[in-house]
Image 1 (cartoon, rainbow, N blue to C red):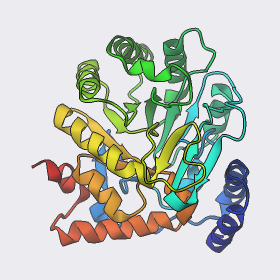
Image 2: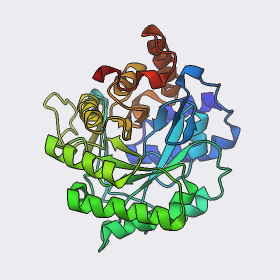
Image 3: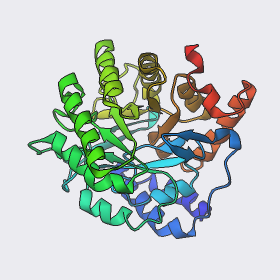
Image 4: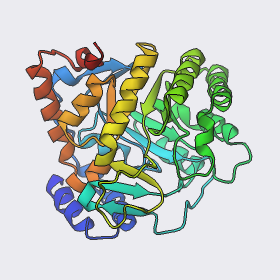
Amino acid sequence: MESILYWGTHLIRLLPPEAAHRATIALLRAGAPLLPDPPADDPCLAMKVLGLSVPNPVGLAAGFDKDGEVPDAMLKLGFGFTECGTITPRPQPGNPKPRLFRLREDLAVINRLGFNSRGMEAAHARLSRRRRRGIVGINLGANKDSADRIADYLEGMRRLAPLASYVTVNISSPNTPGLRGLQDRASLERLLHGLQDVRQETRLATPILLKIAPDLDPHALDEIADVCLKAGIEGIAIGNTTVERPLYLKSKYKNEAGGLSGAPLLALSTEILKAMRARVGAGLILVGVGGVASGADAYAKIRAGASLVQLYSALVFHGPGLVGRIKRELTALLRRDGFSNVTEAVGADLG
């Protein structure tokens, strides 16, 4: 089955990006029962974080499995955890096509999908049928035409958190107009305190993470760090796609509207990660997202303060074998530097 996936991904890359994505999901859905469990990870990669026993710190970012169709297949490919979504309360088609672009020369992707989602109830029905093995997070979003976007997140929390190992609150997509405004202090306070109220009312213990943009200035980082620490959530994922366009981009698609991800995001997102770790200290768990395509990339984020890392865009260019390679490279780097466990390396570059 692994060889079928390997050759299948090569053929799928010949399709337009969004058709390729749907074909990949279909292949994984069909093949999931045939996939063997992954080899055991090196013990040095195992960690206890967010109250969860994570076999390795390399996770699948939201955006790939938008409707929670293949979480178990992705875990079988060797990810330590996977994140479904972004899921909105009501179904919505997203933005007009074309809305997904491969920047091959830059090992990057631009998307302006706009939270295309089959909705919360479809995801609930699908995820409730799982055997609940492995760590599966759920990424929550708001509907584009919602009159009260904070209410959308609270509704998603009530309905989907019981099925999740953790919940990520996505207020940082650049493709839903006005959504990033929820990163402002007053709105963020209302959102996070509302989520805490839901957690208390429903007696949920599901950890809450906030996913922020990488395009934030130092003052915004100060505000977000302060609000998150005071609200009592568990962590921050850093970060989402960027609206910036580095001058060195070569692809003909470089000026397409939307969020840029992949290799050009690595340095920016790692810099913001390090800045946020300096602000929150040990008070929050940080997840490093953006540009991870090797063990060295993952290690850089861990040393900058991330306990966990996530990737997605690199799979487009490197295929499913990337996950095992990153873990092997990360293990070698940890041993080279004298760390017996990945947890010891978290924040090593901060002194």
